[in-house]
Amino acid sequence: MRLIYPRNIAYGMSRMAATTSPYFGGRLTRSHNKASTSSLGDSNAVKGPSTLTSKKRIRKRQHVSIQYEIDDNVKDETVKKQYDKVIPRVAKGEKNKKGFTVVMSSSSHSSGDDWEPCQWHEMLDNIREMRKHNDAPVDSMGAEKICDEEAPPKIFRYQVLLSLLLSSQTKDQVTSAAMTKLKAHGCTVDNILKTPQNKIEQLIYPVGFFKRKAEYIKKTTRILKDKYDSDIPPTLKELIKLPGIGPKMAHIIMDVAWKQVTGIGVDTHVHRISNRLKWVKKTTTNPEDTRVALESWLPRDLWSEVNVLLVGFGQQTCLPVGPKCSECINRQICPYGQSQNRVSKK
Image (cartoon, rainbow, N blue to C red; front, side):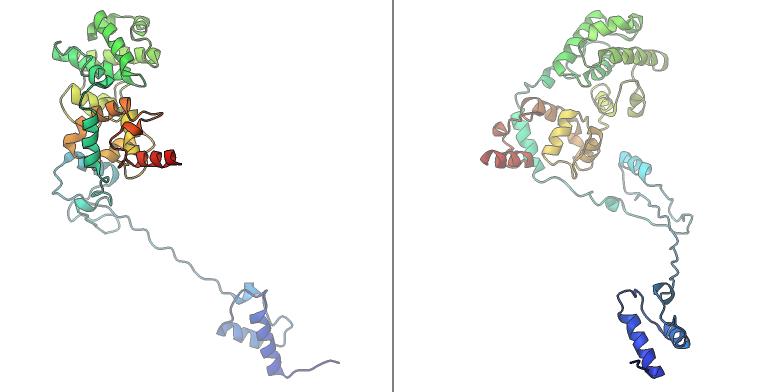
């Protein structure tokens, strides 16, 4: 038996089928209703999603470049230079290419400007207490200890540079022994230039990568002779350009040789301990990132002290493997020490 529906009933049923069908992904609008009404007589009155859904026009927003200006109240030139590397400066009243000028005060350049570690003053005082005897290897074999302080200033500074160059990935005891042999041989610019490279290798052995370091010594010494009148460069930027001299060495050279504090010398000990004490806002993976993180909050008058302090602490107590947390008086407030206490209790 065949049922015949009036025209208006047929329209309502077709509309219901279109809106309730699981195969229909769109939504009927007035324009769609008109289309459906005009095509009731057609067998294809109800269309699929491709015909019922309208295409939306997506207009991309115009990108506006924003530049920041450093507050003139910032007196620390090193801070300004750091911002210059990251943020292009705009003169007062000057507009950028899009016609916008955004001026930000110095205190709000970074959301972490006011951040500092919890109880860091107490941790630092405790480390000073544990290091009060100054009997770590760095205290007797550091860069300033193994150089001839009675030598003329140029020779002393040259020896400081060589001692830091040799110290990379080498224990202080080995570096001290190598410098002793170099001084006995004649550790001056002119004498090192006359010495064959293979002889220098024998003198500095067994420091880490002694062959490569002997090559660096020859190249660096030649640069010092030709460009700096047998002296070492007086700026951090020039020091880093020398073969074999990295940022950590350069900062310590500036401190020991030129008596200028330009940054924190971060070696493997300072890097490890800073992360264990949570003296960095976020975990760092290399010494250079650790240096930047420390300098962002640590008072500048502590930059010179913190290197020797933490290096000796890392040599005696906060060892790379098997740290002596039970002997450390920071164990109750040190995040790493607290985690070790929980593990030992289990």
